[in-house]
Figure (tube, rainbow, N blue to C red):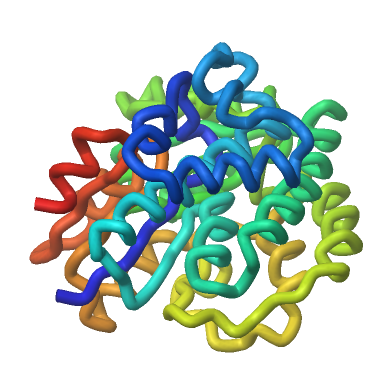
Length: 303
């Protein structure tokens, strides 16, 4: 059975996340020690005791989700579970880079701090909003977005049943009203800006300059890409790739199809929530999908 580790993106954060994982594993606790040292604040304390509002801030949410994902990774690896590939959804690609050996854990947290700061600044300057649209094909969603005044477009191709739109807040709200009037479900996302859209270009430009200071290794596991929707094989310009990643659509549906075509049949989502587990179950057949976010789900994954 070929296994892939999946890592979720921003919006999956929840108060109390990671606390049980840290209790389960000394290596998971070390992840948060590393994060706190690199970030210069106590990340585990915020995860354990922070409010939903505090955790939603981009500069907190991004490293907190990554740390929780890497803590879950530590737990499953301690129990002998290994994978042949990694794939992240948006922010999740950073945990995937650390998991694959492309980045050291220390550099992973330093890099995510730069990304979160650049994107947080963009959000403060009116970075727009996002919403998940259910029950319509992506091409129909795109066509309706084109009819809406202002800037709004599909940015996350999550499954055949769910596409996320992003853009100017008024335009996203107007699009949601249109989809609801058609009897479709539109769910605003818990994010601070229109990620993966052109509204994030200032963040991408700023982040590119920071990312050029880091060393990226060739990954030891197969790395599946949001940008290409398939296996990434060119690692010659990762700073440029990651800058484009901030303003480009997430082609997760294509990634899942590519993973299945490559023979991956076990999909293990590591970190807060089970969004990606749900997407896998709705998109692929003849595969298994589980999440690991606490003691109960860890035990189930290890059965």
